[in-house]
Image 1 (cartoon, rainbow, N blue to C red):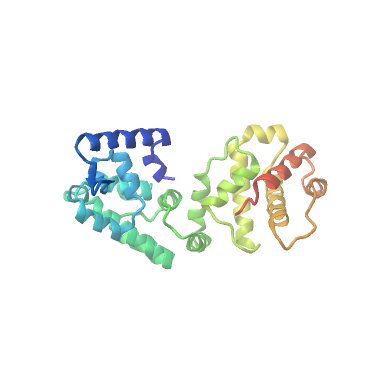
Image 2 (cartoon, one colour):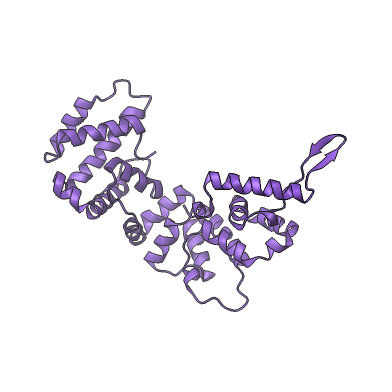
Amino acid sequence: MGQALWRLPPRQQQQLQEELADRLADQGGGRREQGKEQQGFIDLEMLPPELGITILSYLNATDLCLAGCVWQDLGNDEYLWQGLCKSTWGHCSIYNRRLPAGFSYRRLYLQLDEGSLTFNANPQEGISYFMSKGILLDHPTELAKFIFYTRRLNWKMLRIYLDERRDVLDELVTLHNFSNQFLPNALRDFFRHIHAPEERGEYLETLITKFSHRFCTCNPGLVRELGLSPDAVYVLCYSLILLSIDLTSPHVKNKMSKREFIRNTRRAAHNVSDDFVGHLYDNIYLIGHVAA
């Protein structure tokens, strides 16, 4: 999510590459050896900052340190390290503080990388590491924002952590905006950030309950128009999950038909129209699982 902020549109990237090629040609960058043209590696310092940050954002901490040894100016450029930090870890409490003299974003990047690796091995130790370095505040809202805007946390460990910290889970749910989203698409977006457990149980029920209330809060007009309620959305979510399993599992030979899905769903959600339930079926049939 954060990395996309540093990417340029494909057409603009192509234009920049063409301009760079022309510049290298004007400077005698093209070389001929034994009658054949040979091109050397492009110096990152000659690239536009946005393109250079995008390239470097694919490297891990070790590779970045090695790159910093090759490109000395880039290795000491605090603006570059600041961009790499915020494109990978979109929110940290330390970003909003007054930074002390001598603060280094390069050191912060290494600490964030170390903390993420620690989290992916032990979530509690990872969060404790971030707090010990002053990177995060021990507040549910701050922790939820960090999780929501970070793309380096292992989803299995994240699921374990959120199951233990329901206060952080509550704040994380409120960060989602499901306005004007079709229900299956909103559910996919939700499970993309908060991964569903592999088995049915209390945690899955908690997730669907929280999602149902949030979806209704974000779509008051839809709730009035269709007569939805958090309880009705809860039923529809379970129906969508079961339908997803039915249509995508190779072990299910007799797939549920659209007519069967409408009949079964309407038994539990009486106020929902047949047309709306039919559109739900079409979405799963065409796009796929809501929790994949």
